[in-house]
Length: 577
Ligand SMILES: Cc1cc2nc3c(=O)[nH]c(=O)nc-3n(C[C@H](O)[C@H](O)[C@H](O)COP(=O)(O)OP(=O)(O)OC[C@H]3O[C@@H](n4cnc5c(N)ncnc54)[C@H](O)[C@@H]3O)c2cc1C
Image 1 (tube, rainbow, N blue to C red):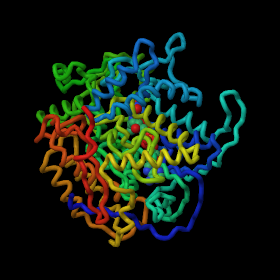
Image 2: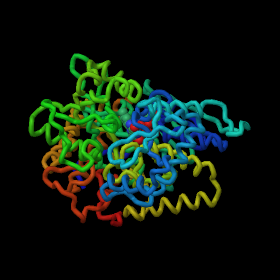
Image 3: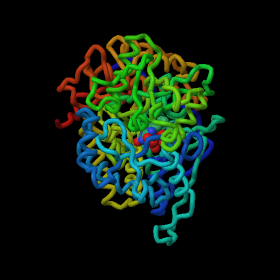
Image 4: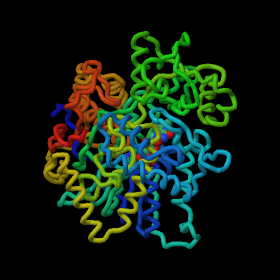
């Protein structure tokens, strides 16, 4: 238990707009679009709600690419082994095996849908190398514009005419895109199942959408930290919605900080700049981490040196900076030469130059920043959660694939595969399929120590409370201070104390209030689980417990109580060694 009290539902006023479909998808990144394509092709009606415009999440920003075994010299076993090694004992090996086995076909499916991946001479896929991988297996597009190509091809497949590979037109379901809408909370029925969703637009108008299935494909939580690679949409809304719907949130303490994020010189900061990612693939091509005097940072720290897993590199940089008091280190890619930069990393080159740094001729100033949320809504790889009618895919979900630390470029692969699988699952709604979903959902609840499905709000008589947008700055500062790369008891306690003291108001008048309330939930989830986990493992690092503890090789599972407190059940769901 913690003293932080979170709202069990958000009050936004009566709905003035209504719509209905078979499935509602929240989010238009790789996961949401992949699901929608399958559903529409199966003739099901889909409403897609997205905060800004189609394809506005992290997906389009991905640089490195998608991890998949496509080279005969590589092997699925090696991809599995690299993923498990990065996951530091908290991956679910069977889920990883499913992902790795499905990845090559996912690349084929994306190609079929129109994604134009980079090719080597002879036409085979050109493959990149990233941290933690022992083989070149990163499929990319446009050099470092992989996510943009994935988003472009999925959006085109989604909104273009439906046709099978043979060109035969198929009957399609109805697709309704609701851009500029923010999902607030699910609508539940008395039996505990989800039956719809409440959304808010930029003018404060409320809509109520009805469907048998609500899919959360809302991406990450980066906006809870002051520096992040994530877009503005990443405010942890899906996590907040799922929590308030009674879902289990697993392993939220595992937040990946990317080691190399450009520190933008103040004179060159563009509006809204929160950090520019310098992909690991740049180190894959030979760039090295150095300090201001040119000393190599990673030599002697890990056998894979600059290509060690992200948590190792991020914490090495953090340690160097804490010791020296410097603001940043450097990523020296000057040895790569102009041609490599222009051909392999045109987007990064452009983003850096726009901000006054030329990586061809000078080392790039970098430091770690929040990048990826390894935890999330407890779900299977085909999106089933502990709450009937609620599904979660992509970065918002915790499927056991990412463990305590995501292996580079496994997330885009996971988002596409999970969305695609969920789309196929929900496309067939016969009695057999319904029964399987019910059973799997019950099994997940059992594994997480939940007796039965139920909304915390169903027995709640407290006034719903929201954190006003005016508190956002302080909240983000508190999360950044207390739950950064390196944590400790006093910092985490300070964070939770500050969150507990955050004043609330009764009603969310605007999207910014909804987002700030969800950011508070992110802080409370991360802080609570991180304080509980008295060890260092994967990307959860504590200065006061600096080693992995075998007894902690288990998941953290959190749910929301009717009184708004988080209940932790870390003693359940032990991972087999
Ligand atoms: C800069 C950057 C580079 C990356 N590079 C790579 C890489 O090379 N390889 C890799 O594997 N991974 C990479 N990642 C991670 C990867 O891009 C993401 O994990 C993945 O794209 C997540 O896909 P998604 O569909 O789950 O979510 P997203 O693509 O983030 O989409 C989330 C969607 O949800 C919507 N949304 C959120 N909340 C709401 C709400 N309340 N109401 C309505 N809509 C909402 C958003 O508008 C958005 O449409 C990178 C991430 C970043 C930020």
